[in-house]
Amino acid sequence: MNQGFIVWEDEYRLGHEKIDSQHQQIIEMINDLYEARFYKKEQMVVSEVIERMCHYVTEHFQDEELLMAAIGYPDLEIHQSEHKFFIAKASQLCPRRGDGNVDIDDLMVFLKDWLLEHIAKTDHQYKPYLGKD
Ligand SMILES: [Fe+2]
Image (cartoon, rainbow, N blue to C red; front, side):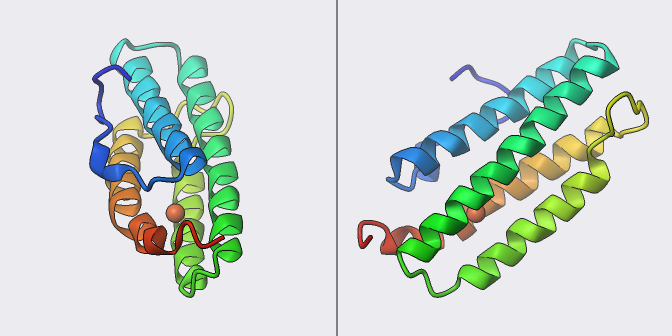
């Protein structure tokens, strides 16, 4: 993975191949977004990157929630509410196709802070339950 806006750290790893690679993919997508913005790509390109990322994150949350249910993680509902908060907030910030009014800087800061906090802390709370499924 290239050095970018967010650098993948080994401590983010949960030891679950699918989830770890999805987390890496999300970070890569945020870095793509940063690059698109940095190089002042057309709004259409930026919007497409954001849309692709929001879609991918939503699918990742579904996979993660299915995994937590499968391993009998007791705090699934609390974790799900964090995912719901993210999706609600992201859909406020994500532009509709062709809408040039999104504040990319706000979106970038939110994505970086929220996702890193979530991956580094909340996701790690189900780590001890992995391997029990
Ligand atoms: Fe999560």
